[in-house]
Length: 105
Image (cartoon, rainbow, N blue to C red):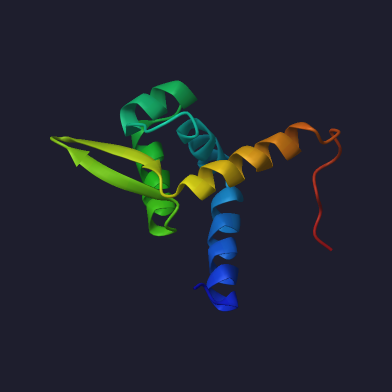
């Protein structure tokens, strides 16, 4: 059973991951299934180094898992609930009217 503190920490990790546009793009790309850094870099128009760094961050947050296949590393979302949650968030964002960016304060 998760405690409130654990739930809060999980939401905070997810929030930190989603705060970066590149990490968001990677997570959305992984909604379609597992990915490899080189393919994700090509798909997203990023360098492999940049993608690898972001994947390491996402892995450290517990949002993606890595599976080694010979010399390649395959990344996928860590939990099916995460896939559903991100899918739902994407649907909400797509339904929002474009407005100026949020400003703290």
